[in-house]
Image: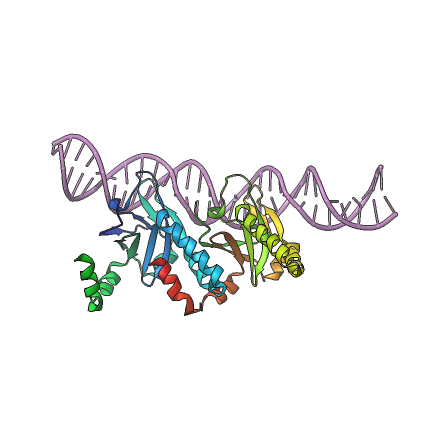
Length: 143
Length: 143
DNA sequence: GGCTCGGTGGGGAAAAGTGGGGAAAAGTGG
DNA sequence: CCACTTTTCCCCACTTTTCCCCACCGAGCC
């Protein structure tokens, strides 16, 4: 199975639940993800297979540069393990929705090894004027 | 199951008991941890699986640098094994709470291989202005 | 049209968090 | 060795939150 691709808008209900897009579900059983804010304006969902190497590298960073401990602690403090319920939904705590301005609608965006969750309006604003500086690199990848 | 993540505030009752957050409980039975102060302003809770390699390294250090014995002894002297009671609570002795300024509220923070226990106010102060020097490292980890 | 699958909503049982009384154990002094 | 004090911790009770489960709706397919 290849990386996550595509974008889907789903409703956030009164309890803070959102259905994970069907095409992002891998096993048919209940799955769990790491929910964390690593970019301004978006939450990220890591499946365990993608999270494991991230966790290793974070610990490596602290061992080599102990002063980075506070930065890493701030990250892990705001991260969270979330599981899908029997309907394939995840629960996003109020606190995390506020961080990225999520209201009634959540935009799920496939980002290869992870899934990003955006407020639809903010996503449009962030992607409508991409920097053309990188176009040659991207074109050469697809050549 | 991956490392400890998330942050949770719980009440310290008059007897010095605090509920361990449910998401930090691994086995359904009673568990035990090593409670120790390794950082200024925070207590650390090590599950046995994380403590074992630490213990190895401490002994290794003494073997290679015998002058470090006093420092290690000061650490182990203030450490403590704590078990959860049937309600999933641990007991934090007054002496340890005073060391890190813990009063009525205790903030449990997941820090991958261990759990840290902070006074909520001190945690905010310590993490609200993280050193941006490490941002590039962290971003490259999540790329 | 009937069926299935994906998405949405809400009620209720179960679990988590909190507090306190009292028995058991440990510590202290005669 | 016994009696008394203090501490520990086991157990019960209550409140709040979580989340499991059922039901419905709508779109697409057979």
